[in-house]
Length: 101
Image 1 (cartoon, rainbow, N blue to C red):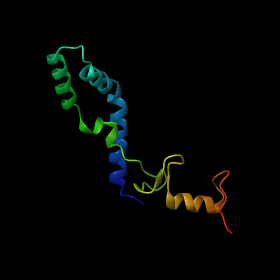
Image 2 (cartoon, rainbow, N blue to C red):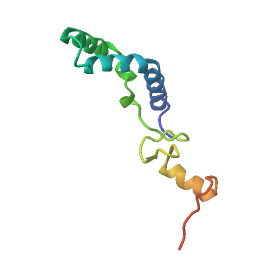
Image 3 (cartoon, rainbow, N blue to C red):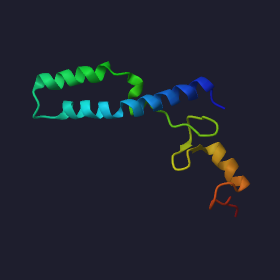
Image 4 (cartoon, rainbow, N blue to C red):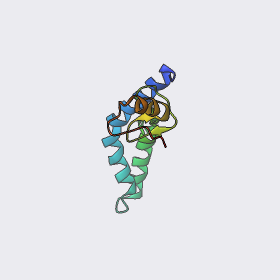
């Protein structure tokens, strides 16, 4: 099991990212708009820099839904390799069969 504080911190980042997503997209579009005045673009860049860093989507870490493990993560199943192997061995993942030859 991962530390509870790490899992909670990641959940907080996920909430912040969804809350600020629209505002962040608006500011990024203003910064990348080449027809806008340089002062407006610079002002938008300053506003973007003032936003919380944890509101950036890139700061969210993919973690296993069951254990919170941050590494060896399968995106399609939202599980780490350990839990994937365990659940597959127990036959709890539909369509996945333990291979043996």
